[in-house]
Amino acid sequence: MHSSPAALVHEFHRAFGLDARSAPTEIPRTLAAHRRDLLEEEAAEAAEVAVDGPLDSLAQELADVVYVAYGTALVHGIDLDSVLAEVHRANMSKLGPDGTPVRRADGKVLKGPHYEAPDVAAVLRKQGWTGGAAPDEK
Image (cartoon, rainbow, N blue to C red; front, top):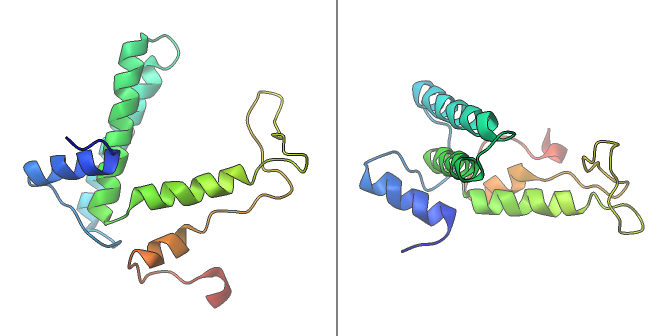
């Protein structure tokens, strides 16, 4: 059995005859709306148990959110692992100049002075996306 979320969700889409694209692309509006509805439904279910649990329900709902997010990426032909790696790179640049996190009073991590925004468009272009212009090409 595959262990990465992308591989598991791809297996599901194949088995159930669901859309799966191999390169980033826009999808029909009706399919995009369906994927939006699935994401909203799963996020709402996770939010419902996030505070008062139980923990096993929260774990399942979080997994469902990830599953549907990866499925939505697959329907759009997005290699979400690569996008996630780019977002992670950007998030790690939020560290302050002394290598410690910059936090808001409630604990949220803020962008430090060395923060570099993720270049998701560049990641998508490497995957074959032809839409959108790079910031310096606008």
